[in-house]
Length: 307
Image (cartoon, rainbow, N blue to C red; front, side, top):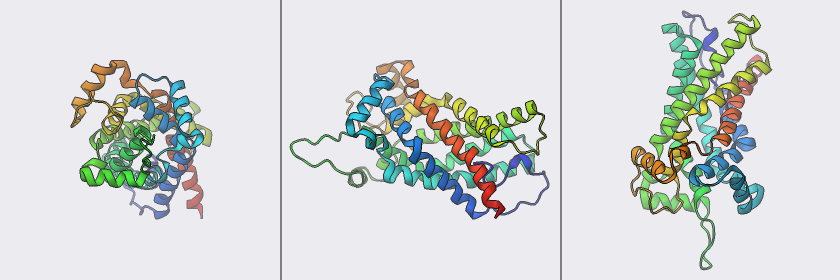
């Protein structure tokens, strides 16, 4: 992702910056759509279910999700929310993180690890407030809302639900929990990119490669997997985000939740361990996303830029 436009680790400090090819932004969006449409959304649904239903086990989450609609239930919220999120956040992340990484490298001669971390922070903030507040909120609504018809009434569809929230609560209603999303994205992507870059440098050192020598495809995937897995240290922020955006009936939840009040509510009702509910599928989501964006994405970009 951070290498989709300009590889900061390979740019000399005084080099003249070339424009970001527009096709790299399209690659970022395409790779994100591929990621979420394959393994991403099923793991997203499971981790959201576990974060909202903190007493369920992973096995129970799978069983309950399957009972709601078999395979289709594992892709709840994919259309249009996950696709909308994927197609925008990938391009935003590539644009912002690449610019920050480039300037950190060329103007301050920062290390690849620090460049990646700074790029992740900036990209995470931009993603959250430009597109992800609404889309993550609606994905969580899709997983946690009651879809059982009562009294013969028709269960509202996803767009109908969106419009209803918009009418009743306005823009804030469909962006509920956006600050928690921003905290998750900033810590998550700074860790993913930074740790992935550190892993790449470690692999180069152990294999005797110079800093300008390209890693093999398998080495890049390994570095991406390490970055994605270790970035899940911030799982409490994900549980916090889901709880703030959930529409599951819970009379004990704060009426006007803030990050602090929601955190206290989770700990008081479910205990400290509940802050890490859903971390296993989250590791899957993070690893797969990092592999797609950093590993596959860099490879696709190199192929496209040869043409």
